[in-house]
Image (cartoon, rainbow, N blue to C red; front, side, top):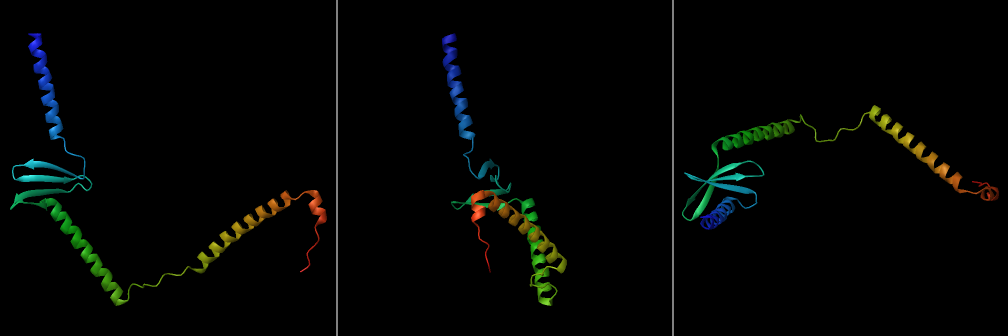
Length: 145
């Protein structure tokens, strides 16, 4: 009895493994699932679901109704935004010239740059004075300009 049971279990295990591998989708961007009305295609990157049907030797996919509504709503919002911006530019409400910095912004920037330069020059002076030996300092001749 045990001899008959082992081959049956082994054959059952192989068949179960084969069906698992056969149902597992290939890695990629889209996951497909057969439905009563065709094929549902899931875009794994965007989450978009499309319904696909075969006809005349071609497969045609269309967005699901709720996603189509959201897509059209977003398209309408962007169209209105573009129209508003174009109207504002046409009426002269929006200037295409860049805004120049204010006097306060310039002063603040210059103050920061000045502090950085003073710190840098202090480091350079420290390095210059640290590299010279005492005999080098004796040989220096003042420069006349």
